[in-house]
Length: 445
Image (cartoon, rainbow, N blue to C red; front, side):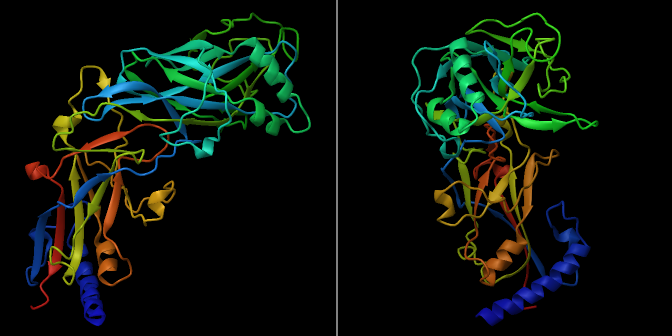
């Protein structure tokens, strides 16, 4: 049996070379691409082996973190609370907090999922228990102080938010910052950070940037993204005295992006000219995802990049009688469900990655965080809003026993801390139904 399949595999490789020379890899193979003197069969098969499965969704220390609340007509109600842990890392080891130094929380919005004309309102709370960012997932909860320390507002026009933390907290943080023995260990053991909790009347989810280091063409480095910002008192450190434009405890202000001042302050105009200021990185960030009432999925296939809703595809080669066929090309074709995708109120927006990600996962890999790279990553073809991927090698490897599964787990993009949905047309969508295009050789001719 193995010898026969191996022989067929060799034949298929030869034929594949002939077909490849006559076809465009960006299109579905059809009879017009096939040499007329060969008995080539092209089957267009509906894909029916589909299901939706939930995998573990880890949310800690990603490129972004999300917070907000939104009711999506297809995906239903979702609410996310963000968790932020303070750190001690700065650009310069000479940075020092003087007595009376103020500390601000900077938040940098990146994208919006929901009503882009609304204002996202958040209450900031102290977290009162130790937590580990790397262990956080969609179901994680933390214990927080029930009393808010202030309110933060974000709109689609907001470039960044500067929120002054209570002076009592800043004074305590200064003790850890200036400690020389075990400052990081003591900070972790005693300061647990903040929870960014959306108000119930919110109608948008905001994705925030985490911290990053950027350099300009002259080699000057600055921190960008969400972080802490220390402002020493007037007359301390370098520079002339300037005007204190802080807003007091429990209030926030928005700022337009501008050029950093070369001392690590990042991508905004420093509102404290002449005062010694510097940025401090967060130790970690995470968020949870709470799902409420379900939306109307209809016959579509709603999937997410967070591994909450994975489309599971089983090619069912044996059931289709394809196990022993000489397959020279195989292509999977999905379409966006245009009606469901565009069924949003005016000014509402669903972000999109413009791609799908196919994973092959063992039983063990499905129990933990998915850290491997996707096997395939087809991009959206704007002409017909389709995603096409060549799976010829995967099928041939299965036929020859090099792999043991033709099951794929499909997400709507990279799990990077943003909530990115996609809505694919389901099996009952007529011409836009999922397809498996098989080009095979009749071995009897």
